[in-house]
Image (cartoon, rainbow, N blue to C red; front, side, top):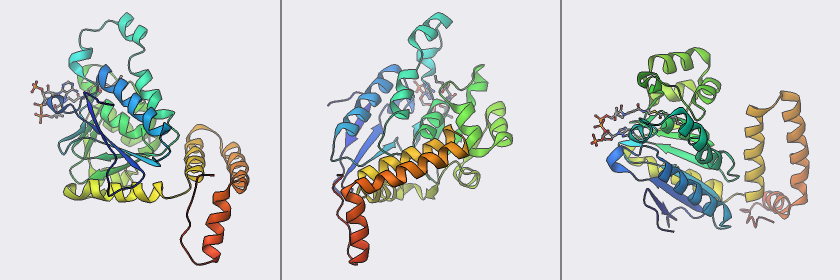
Length: 261
Ligand code: HXC
């Protein structure tokens, strides 16, 4: 599909990876209705494609995304925001994707951009990354999960600090706080992330999907329920050929070839 606001690639050096690049350079990749609709479409396509085992979502060197598009929002009324259920459809598309999504963040990830990165399964940052929820400066609040996810990821005190002051957090602070899993020099970011994504894409897609679901459950449910779910899914993995292959390969001292069956 040809997109206006995204560039979607299947990089040769990263087999099994779909690379989705936000591409509104004139607005530092600000998220608007068109971009989120295209993102939903691109994620659905990646999800439907058996060749894709991992998705990487990235922006430019200057910005992952500098927030929701303020120019699109500024004149909207409450009735319009409510009727459009502003950005909920886009957020849901990311939230319900069953394949892992890695956010590769360089430059600004602000407002909705930070929220979009946090909806992904992990954030890997360039040393140039700057995270923030500056909505307070506009007289509003985060609207696609920022107050909830940032608080769970970095704790209440730092989330309050970020959200009430609108200040930015650099990559080192984000790594220290648990917001990002790893930090790389900016010029190597995409290659490092593609290598990580290719490694995930080479695993059993069944095991990957179940592992993703289990870690997500840790945020959605109680410990007892989460552990019970883990036990059930762990046992159920023994129904797949990939479990037999993975364990046989270990015993035979060779690399496994997973088939997703
Ligand atoms: C629309 C934006 C934008 C945004 C940048 N631009 N951010 N347009 N919405 N969120 C545009 C600028 O207007 C400008 O366009 C061009 O991108 C380059 O930006 P500059 O400001 O000139 O760049 P710079 O001086 O380097 O500053 C970078 C920046 C700043 C610090 C990131 O752009 C900034 O503060 N942006 C807004 C960040 C923000 O408040 N985000 C939260 C949005 S609210 P022109 O045409 O002038 O060249 C939100 C709510 C989420 O996200 C809830 C969802 C439902």
